[in-house]
Length: 132
Image 1 (cartoon, rainbow, N blue to C red):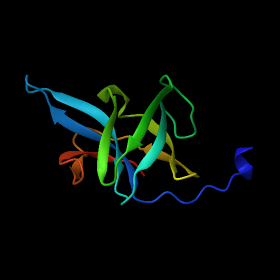
Image 2 (image 1 turned 60 degrees about the vertical axis):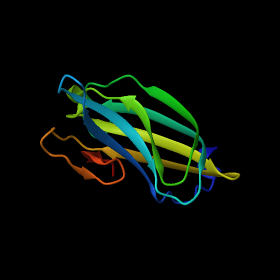
Image 3 (image 1 turned 30 degrees about the vertical axis):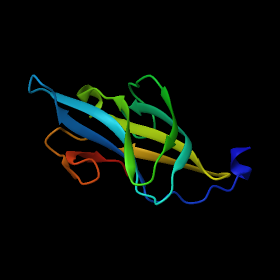
């Protein structure tokens, strides 16, 4: 059972929603995983979903699953495209990965926000919102 597994604290790993501008001058939004650790992450699994209410109530999005074989130290990877229509939802990202044979697991949440409430994300060199 999951409750019987001791998961070490996840540090130096972030989930962020970043904004880029396409060739037509329109905003493109993507979810990124950022590895600020000095060591690679292996077998990264990201499960994303969103709900209108913090406890999971109200309207909900589909649940998406993504796998990344490895994420090198001090790098990031694009996870999925995200529609600004769900920025008013609580977007949750369950992230699991291995370092060596040790399993790490953490739930990240991006609380509702608007496109005007974004800030610089240094690691991505773009603006967006970082999950808590």
